[in-house]
Image (cartoon, rainbow, N blue to C red; front, side, top):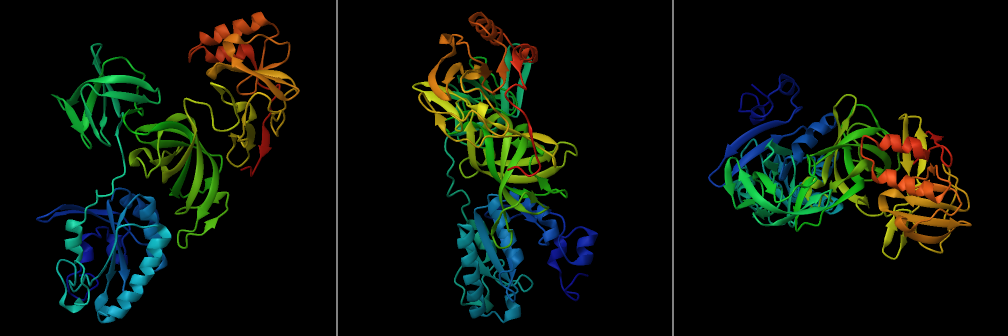
Amino acid sequence: MGSRSGKIDYSLLLDGLMAEREQGITIDVAYRYFTTDNRSFIVADTPGHEEYTRNMAVGASFADLAVILLDASQGVLVQTRRHARICRLMGIKYFVFAVNKMDLVDYSEERFNEINEQISVLAKELSLENVQIIPLSATEGDNVTKKSDNIRWYDGPPLLEYLETVDINSDDNEKGFYMPVQRVCRPDHTFRGFQGQIELGTISVGDEIVTLPSNERAAVKGILMTDKNVQTAYKGQPVTISLDKEVDVSRGCVLVKGADISVYKRIRASVLWMDDEELVIGKDYLVKLGTKTIPGILAGIEYAVDVNTGEHIKTEKLSKNGIAVCDILLTEAIAADLFTSHKTLGELILIDRVTNMTSACGVVESLSEKGGSSSDKASFKYGELSARGDIFEEFYYDTSSLNVLKYQPVKETYTVGDEIPTSGESYKYPDSFDIIVLRDGVSVKVRSRKITEIIPTTEYAYGGVPVVNGRGFGVNVSSDSDVKQFLKEYSETDEKTQSIFFEKWVRFDEYRKVIVKSDKR
């Protein structure tokens, strides 16, 4: 049976669903395994139809190399461009464009050269590297496993020979060691180990590592692989690492040695939307990056990408199978990096918090609002002192997502002598006031809208003007003794008592309000 009039139909090897066989198309991703004398392979056969783009992306996300089939009689189609773009988005670096059905064009070298030129233009547009173009006929066996007598003008390798010999690790740009923590193992009070798979580099007993996001340093005390102690472990190995001192590490944290990795709160990512419901600015999702799952808000869409042409389109929404560059604001800073620098810390998925379905997958293109230091936006600096300037954040209520969103359009860094904006759409401060940024231990004095002093909070004395905290909320102080008590109680707060502290000392509605916006970017 099949579509070849009694001849063997090889597509049935991979098309396992009855609907696939009846319609003659691939719907789901089918995985098949085979081994040659030189290499073992896992083949993920993915669908080509646009309706099943998300299925195709799932298969591509696990692949090291993509084989994109073209019909020699049709050349580069919209489908070809879409698949190449998504494979590029999923981080595939090696591409084989298999120009199939050469028998239907009488094995024409001229026709192959025309298609070769089309593929070269596409490869340049998408910045594809490591591209191999092979003419073949799958049904007749030409250039599949061995050189074809019908395509003597082609002097390259057949498909299988190329797959057996291509070096997919030749351009690995990742540096250093890092391991996302999957689990903290504490069988009793005498042992605490951090379990995970080493994503890059090697680690040895005695090495010093840095924990992210807590940024603590410790030495490796021991390494367990299953139940055996080892001195050194390598990339790809699952291990349990114990350290020589207690550190603040839990699931989702990252152990780092010699790798340029930091923690960030805002991510700009290229995402493929996979949900039946449209992506809407302002909706909150669970963001899974590495082993960390954290709430985040989709703060804006920079632009959508026409999957077929590559055109950048301004939009506020994104439909299923669409691609867009989006800004995601996380509730706290986490270890992350560009996808091109450290793959595991640069790929993410968005999970719907209600349905628990995967809404999107994507890769990190840029990072901002670095954790552990002052924000790049609207911060105060003077000498060695630095404080985050969240007083300039705008608060909007988005009617489509029913969420309160924060935007911070001011990018300047202010210092002594600078004039600051004391009013915005959602905030208005007096012309003279003081700012106590508790988390950074810095105080800023503003007189007639100009900064007169930036000093450590330990040196601050009440100046007889209104006081706000680093978020721009009023502080209930009217004397120097009030300030000292305020700072003392803050130093004694923890997660359980924090809400009580803010209820006592902070006035949330004095200088701030929430603006209703239905289409604010």
